[in-house]
Image (cartoon, rainbow over all chains, first blue to last red; front, side, top):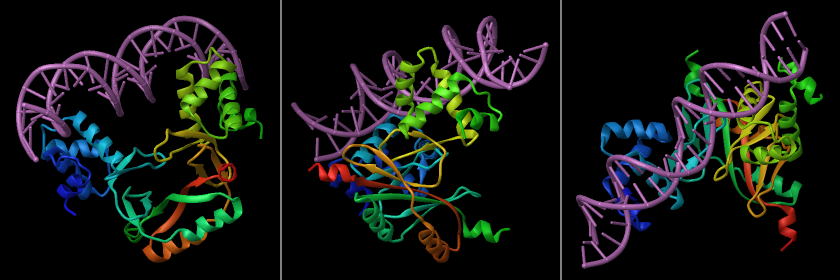
Length: 135
Length: 135
DNA sequence: CTATATGCAAATAGTTTGCACGGAT
DNA sequence: ATCCGTGCAAACTATTTGCATATAG
C-alpha cells in the first residue's frame, strides 16, 4: 500500500510532511528522532520539529509506525511491519530485522508459569556477518 | 554480597544515599525513576533528585544496576542479576523476571544469518496467572 | 586528611501545547 | 465553509552541571 493510502486508511490526511516522515523511515529502516530530524532538515527544511513530534506520536497511536527501544540506545522508530526480532550489531551499530518463529519459547513460558503469552519483543546483540568477515 | 560490599568492590563509597537507592531497587524488583523518587522521598526526604540521577547513572556504568526498556512504558531500573527474560502483565502491569534458556533461538539465528549472537534482551507481554484466575 | 559525594540552584535538553494561519475536501 | 494540520513561540518536563559544603575511608 502506498504511504498515501496508508494514511488515508487511518483517516489521516496525506500531507507532504507526513509523507516525508514516512519516506524517511522507509529509507532508514530504523531511525531515532535525531536521525529523522537531520534527514528531514535537508529534504524539507521548513518541516518543524513540533510537526515531527506530533506526527510520530499520531502515527504511533494509529499503529502505522512503531517505537522500538534498545538498552543503551536512543529510541528508534520504524514503519509497522511483519513481526520480527531485531539484531543489533555491537560493532557497526546496524539494526537488522529478522523474521523467525518464536512460539516455542512462548509455549514453554506458558507451560512453566501458567501465564498467557500475548506477544513478545526480542532483540539480540550480535556481531553481524559483515563485521565478522571484515576482521 | 551486601550492598556495602557491592559498592566497595566497584570503588564506590557506600554512602547512605546509594544504599537507600539499592535497597529501594531490591524491594521493588523493578522501578522507574519516578517510583524511586517517590519511595525515597519517604524513607530519606533529604536525598536530592540530582543525587538519584547521578547515582543511577554511575551504578549503571558500573553495571551494578541495569536499565530496562519496555514498549509503551517508562524506563525501569533493576539490580543486576542472573540473566532472565521479563514477563509484563498487560492487565495488572506487574513485571516479573523469569529464568529460561534462550540458546536454541540464538543458535538458530546464528545458523540462518551468519551473525555471531552475543546477548539477548527478551520481554513478553502476558496476562499473568493471577489475573487469569481472577476472571 | 583527602578524595569523593552531596545538595542546591542554574543551565541545558527534550517534548508538548496554544493559537493564528493555510490548504484540502 | 469547515476541518484538520502546520509553524512558531511559549510552556513544561526531564536531565545534567557547577560549585560550596559535607563525609567516607
